[in-house]
Image (cartoon, rainbow, N blue to C red; front, side, top):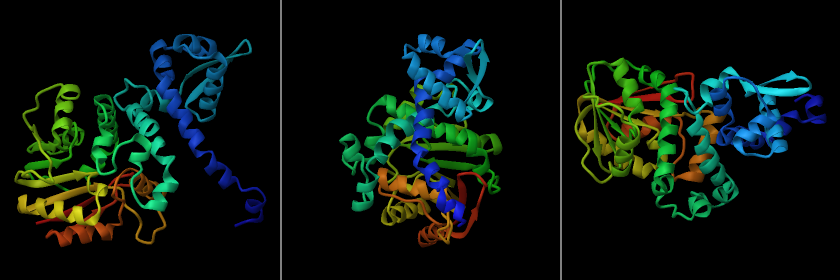
Length: 345
């Protein structure tokens, strides 16, 4: 470390402001600033934006200025007054109506994760989920906490959809899965990843197995067409029968649980997997030497705060799969947040 770093610790100043940055972006999304500028189609002043949104002019002006500093908005000066418009990134990812919108992800982070992370010190001291403190929900009922209302369930499902709209193709194509024709996506939510799979492997069919309330919400809010290649099955994969399949997909599921539950579920999947079949896990991975990636390390802290699970290293996933009966375990990094692990029967 240079003497300059010790004289002025810019790194630490940047880190301490991290939550200020994220909450600024979340607030602009929640208030509908990016949506308004998209709908109007022309730059607006702070006063005009405040009038449209029924917000305080001075507060709105400060928020808009911060968004310019974050490169989420552009400012054009006219007669000594700033007029604001979306940047290309905001137009694609923060406008609610955009096909690639991350709006619901931002709302989930702002309303759920941000609240839970205020109790990170307690989570580290106690080694358990903080949902009970954050929301008054027992830590034993993790998914009841996620789904406290239909509105929050829809937000969470949109959040998962937005992830797979951006990263789904990479994890699905990490391995050649063309030999598998009958696929079961366990915890597949509204079917975004299933659609990514079918867009690559046209000759397959996918059954999505998820909790009854998830399936019912998916059919109510997300299913716009009756795709004969996608079927929904209501069930709890810990307690109900898992249908036979050539390939099982579990995306961001195993990281929710402690090893004992992981093995219980993986062994059950192994029994339902047809000979020659496989299981595809999609997770964020930690480096074996614990050096990173930082995003994975932060996600693992988040699993401590929100669930009983954690993020794992490739060797840990390989061990879980091997102990469950799977063989020839392979790990593929995609270069993005989520990576793929494949085990064969």
